[in-house]
Amino acid sequence: MIAGAAFVAGSLLTNTVVAQNGAVSSAEFLVTSENPNYEKALDKIRQATYHEKTKDKAKTYYVRAKVFTAILQAGAEDEKVAALVTNPADSAFEAMKKVKAMEKAAGEDKYTEKLINISTDGLNVQQSLETQLKNTILNDVQKYQETDVERAYKAMVPLVDYFGNDTTLLKYTGYFAAQSEKYDEAGAYFERLGDIEDYNKSDAYQSAASAYYQAEDTIKLMNIVKKGTAKFPEEKYFLLVANDVHIKREEYQEAIDVLKKVHTLEPKNVQYLITLARLSNQLEKKEDAYSYYQKIYEIEADNEEALRALGVGYYEDAGEIYRVLRKEATDAGKSINKEDKRFKEMVVLADKAIPYLMAYKDISEDKSIVYSTLMNVYIYKGDAKKADEMEKLAEESK
Image (spheres, one colour):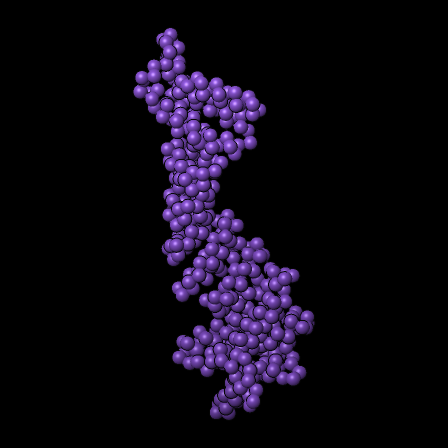
């Protein structure tokens, strides 16, 4: 009686294991036959996935990946099949990861090889399961990349998460994320691409910087700038981005320090020099500003901003001294002492202003104002004849 009961129990246990192994094989057959039954295959593999006897077998997860891949493929053409599972691609990739993890732990590779290598059946050669799934997703991306970029982006996410450092996938996932205005996510994908050691193009970090800039995430943006300048020291893009961030934060000295580095790469770039001059003025570093404007003048003698800044700047500096001297002289009931050291300093400044103002009047839209300014300069110097000449020209040019 006891022996018979043991025999029956053993038979039942064996039958249960066989039944569950059969469920796995059935699921595989149901999605590969000429008349597939995806719903039934899904039911079978779900049972096997959670059953005590088959839940820890690599084959179970290999077939699970195969079932979800088949559903994704068929669902592209059949809405009823598509409705069976919300995210078949995610489920397929999760199953594939499980296969690899289980076999790696066990020191095996049978089903891992089936995932990544082509298979042959007589004369028929079939793509690996990974490739099938990848191509199915990419077909969906291609279908929607022009009409629904967010859907294209969402389709790319499981692909890039599974294949990791695939540079092409990272680049397009970042692109579709940016097109979907998911800038923070786009930045993360482009940053991953740039972080790949043998990816030696600056475009990835540049795209990441652009995305983080759009996301208004200055912390991540400045981190990318550091990475970009470290990996591509001759690439000015990252320095210019940092300069822009510092200016927006009103960190003018930091902006100057960065832009000086850019200027060393392009010493004749007038726009960089103009920005340096303007930033120096923001910090009330007048002499530094004059120095930058002088460099601009040497490169581009008809630069309107440089001519105006130098001419008007030196004129105003001379005027400050002149007004002090005139007040002192008036209070004392005397004329300005031309032997005064300050008067001589004023004349030097006035003489500096004259050539820039003369050049500026040739391109200025209002010559009358420039001539009036020159008149004052000559008054400062005590040159009444030239002052009268400039006054006359100012009247004639109105």
